Length: 241
Image (cartoon, rainbow, N blue to C red; front, side, top):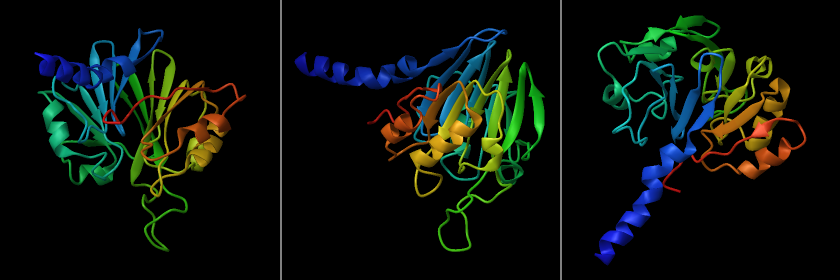
């Protein structure tokens, strides 16, 4: 009996992770609930509809609601995972993705950089996501311009930005009226926390939430945004930690 109790107690944090990390944002159309799943994988719920952003292993998807819409940002396996997409799909599930993803996920509909689509009560804007200077070797970049998307999702007058894999590119810095920004930071593939904070200062969202941050020192990010009026929220995107 003691062994069973100990196992149960240690399991509780993992079981409760998703529920305790869910953020609820009021809008004129009703609440938007956003739950971190793992790394870039995100669950968005509003108006009886379920949206997943970049569902990919090892995010735990079992028992979660099926997707009405799946948004994919890039071709890399931590963003585009056909197995995970299949697990959460149901008849009628729609997928929007950059054209480079559509070459592999042929059931997806393309949404290239700069395009805006309406889906249900949401407006979806595809924001360029790319590297400016970082790559695996001279002359090559980890993420080429035009290949990947970030997204600005608007619902009930509130604007939510998900950066995707990117450095602090001009298109990010030029964003306007963002209520909640989810911004990546991890080396060597995107940018370090201080660069991410500098980019966030430029477009000044009301709330910023680091994601896709494995190995980054989030205290550096927080400190850089002190006294800016931008609220920094730190969520656990790596439940095994």
